[in-house]
Image (cartoon, rainbow, N blue to C red; front, side, top):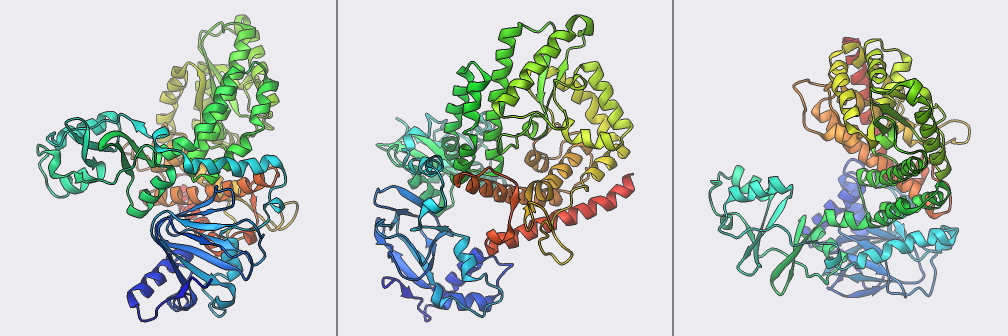
Amino acid sequence: MSDALPIDAADEALRTRIVDFLGAVVGEHAADGRDLDALAAVARLLRLEESANWPLPEDGEAWICLVLEGVMVVRGNAATSLLALAEGSGFALPARRRKGDGLIVKALDAGSLLLVAESDYPADTASLPSFAEMLTSLDAVGVDRQSELQDDAADEVVAEQRPMLHTPIGEVMTARPFALPPEATIRDAASLMAEKRISCLPIVQGDHRLVGIVTEADITARVVAAGHDSAEALATIMSDKPLTLGPGDTLVDLTRLLSQYRIAHVPVVKGGRLVGIITQTDIVRQQSSSVVHINAEIARLDSADAIAGITAETPRLLAHLVDSGSSAMEIGHVMTSVTDAVTKRVIALALEDLGEPPVPFAWLACGSQGRREQTSVTDQDNCIIIDDRFDKTQHGEWFARFAERVCTDLDTTGYVFCPGDMMAMNPRWCQPLRVWLDYFDGWINRPDNEAQMLASVMFDLRVIHGETGLLYSLQSASLDAASSNSIFVAHLMSNALKHRPPIGLFGQLATERRGQWRHKIDMKHGALVPIVDMARAHALSVASREVNTWERLTEPAVSEKRGVLSEDARRNLAESYEFMSMLRMRHQARQVRRGHKPDNYINPDDLGQLEREQLKYCLGIVKKLQATMQSRQGVLG
């Protein structure tokens, strides 16, 4: 690494910046200042001009490479991007690496890398992760991928994500965006953004020549906070000369701008004229584009066996979404959309064979599909609410045949029968609205252990097909009753305490002690289910109609009722839920690439120091809030 130079000890500003940077990478809760100083003292700095290439050495010792500033990509002989790296990210260069790949780091704009060799890494720094832990927490380049990817299908998962970096902006942007002239008023902009549910407005003159941009943040900071009159012209608050991209630029260029300048919206111009707008949301849309094709393919297939061939590929979709940077909520929504598409198609096929229903009905998803939180093909949870004109003698046989046909086809496509028999083919869960109203009344007013168990499924309902009004009527009658019944709310809180997070008395991770999952942590039941249950208890305590866990935790107050979770508690749970969900999804994505069946069990030894510390912190939050809920449960009960 002869191109990299030691940090100049005399440059105090640079050294302070690097120490702060390393503290952010390692985690400010995990490292003290003296250890960070020791690490900064052995780091080397490599500066790269825009478009410069730096060849990676093919052999030698191991290195940790961190992007201090700029955006870079690691490329191989085929000129395809193996990794895209922004400020704060990095990669590992193991000691034993493959030769002949011609790996280079290309700087997309002027930037610098921090490099730390294994032989230089401080040994007596108790608060820092070991070099091996740092190395394994980063993506490795130059290693034999065939040891990790055990079949051609898994190789395609990695290859599938690479072209996305080079997608032209013109293919992804929102074309012909809403815009206003600079003489329009601030009130005009605020009204248009509220009406169209957009967060920015390009400002144009004459023949659509871009002269500025106004965002929601501008209106908040420069109008509400600074006291501008809403009747003033947009020219008084707009950001003039905004950063722009052309339709031929790529998502790599967009990533560079978003990261470097901490912005969220980039106008797209051609010849100085506005032709589109591109945001982080458009990246997510591009990441999800493959699911559009999957769902379209499902909609045209004419048998459950044919659909099964599509659902078998959904684990690769999960890996693709994880690799491309989507959030846990976005991944859950996309993955559940496939389940929804399958459900809708098998219902349509059943209706083609059985004919139209004798009375209206609604097919509903429960559990993780109802909450839109699925990560892979799983067992099915569903039910049917039938219009009260239902007569068992006249209509019972049709609905029994219909429910059995749909559930059986779902099983064929990979969504296996529910072990607890919570399916529409069970007559108990295929009933008219009046019966469902009686069910909910009993669960709310006479809560017992079964009611707690059923609440964890049946209060997470979402209509997939049919009359949405049937669910609305059920919710209208049950939500107010549920939120007003303190005994029922106490039972929901009790249910949220059944699954305890795997964290010990002194903050240590507690793994399974025996059996197949020995030395591992159950991320589903130990980390995520407690948050799902607490979010549900809170939502029902305030009569919220939301069923998605993230939305239950982050939605604004929907009533004057306080709820069982404070605003700070909900925010902490939401952040913990996102981190631990992504940890689980990344684990499952690695299993998919290796040709293994995804599971929910993570070995803490496979995590880097930073991930382990963050996991401990999040599980500690769950444990603390469960204790708070337990004390409040006694008051309510």
